[in-house]
Image 1 (cartoon, chains in turn orange, blue):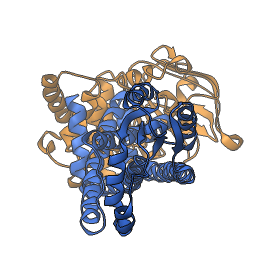
Image 2 (spheres, helix red, strand yellow):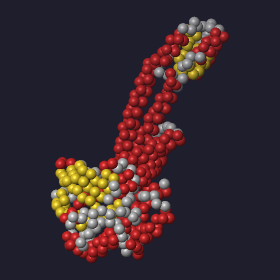
Image 3 (spheres, chains in turn cyan, blue):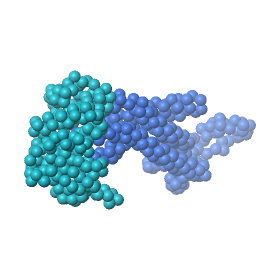
Image 4 (spheres, helix red, strand yellow):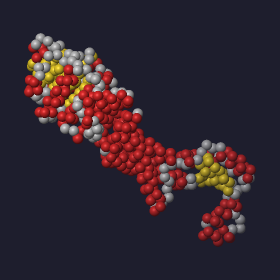
Length: 230
Length: 285
């Protein structure tokens, strides 16, 4: 599903964001990416959603090496991924349901199909009652739920979450994490970058730790079962 | 299409001040260009009017029969440079002289016979009213047997020539400079409005919007702003023209076709600068 093979990512001025990273995320797996800020967690996610291409090595997403994607294939791939960020990245001038609908509209889904789908995912994240609220009228946790609903609306095979609880208080963090677990339980793989070790300890999921751009620990490999869902 | 239109309108609604500001900037940038072009057009029109006075006169030998002159007129009219030929008889020449030179009334009254020769007055087509062509035509006219003398304002035409080329060069240069400045101003303005929405573009890309899908509303918006700016510029130019026309001098305004060209220029400029700016943001993600 997602495979990085001996990936290096260098930025101008010769700084390496990733060094020789190899990892594999299986279908319906839940994986924590941990490490200090700057360790390379976000770089791994960027390579997966093709915000960047590896300097060396190969990144395969849904079976295709990302280097071989034509520019017009990239949007198509992204529609099959759900992406969530620490800062939510909602469009401020649109309501919760418009933000979610937007992700459907860009894919050219028929207008009459948009409404029911949006209602379904908003209900799934527990925000059915706040569909008409604008982002500034929502709490941080609620905004992140809208972002998650938007990520889910296209039925992705994997949800990429970059510090999704980084801006949230403890209670909202628990709620969002619980939501991600439910999504995973429904068969969607989740790759969650976080430096919140309490969260990591709470659940017995596979954990990959990065340090200075290199993988220093992978519980899946240590267990001798990289394909497992933990 | 409908979605793109909705997105374009949304940006107007959301940032009305910025939208108005950019339309105003475009309008004024084009307005300045419009003024310069208008001045150029009027100078050219004035010079053309002066050019109409360029004529070559052939004085006929005394006793040239009218038929010979009439035949010659047909030949002359067949010159590619010639627009019109008129025959002025001796009597007519005297009558004109009396009218135009009233201060010599006494001299005319004392005349026992008409000293003025008959002549052919030759008007040239606009494209041939320069020193080189006039000289050439005059040379050919001298070849006619009955031509006593051929006259034209040699120095005056040379001066007019110089004036014309200076006016043309200056107006092209100034118009080009102002047009370049307005292209830069309009490009920057539109870039600013797009920069303000860089985050939004990034989000669109992340949820899987194609480059074309992101680009289209911006192009629509840019073209629309440019066209409105163009219309406002034409209106402003007209107001300025009306004031000058009333207070200082009579001139000409843009023809409807030229005005439409102006609006089209605004539209294309808006479209083009949007395309460039959006393209830059699209490449970043």
